[in-house]
Amino acid sequence: MPRHAPIETLYRAQFTRLVGFARTKGAGPEEAEEIVQDAFARLARYGAREKIRNDIAFLRTIIVNLIRDRYRSRAASPPHVDYDEMDHDPASPSPGPESAYGVKQALQLTLADLDALPALTKEVFVRYRLKGETYEQIARACEVTIAVVRRHLRDAMIFLVKQRGQREDG
View 1 (cartoon, rainbow, N blue to C red):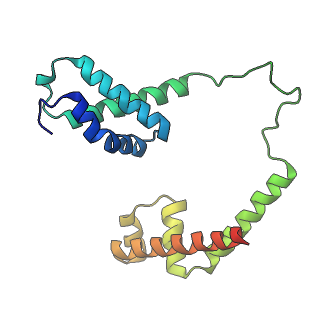
View 2: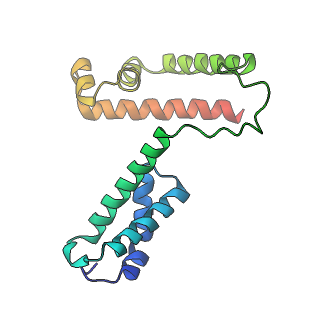
């Protein structure tokens, strides 16, 4: 994109790509579009476009900052409670018996699925997903290459997702 391209041309050419970028940074679909529009508005208000060397990098920086600002404002403000519509019996913070049983059953099935994995695949998966170890740490501990670690993680994920899908499909 030429450096002095009108903002409208830049908007048409890059809007979809920048919305995708905003989504990868944690914005929801509608929120991402709003953020990108706001970023272009800020670019237009910035005025001295001659100072901007890379419009896209500048817009991406604005988008990241807008997402951070929204996250901070949500974290700082307490949740809205409409007392007029509130039930007289507030919801319990603990799950009901049916929900607790369902969660317990799902956990047992997942543990059974993990036990069905080959030993090395299970070890790699547990070290990565549950213990938070890096690929390098796992490779050293299991005396394999990083490529083998990745393959076992992939195999574990495919197997576990397939098992869960089969249960949900009936």
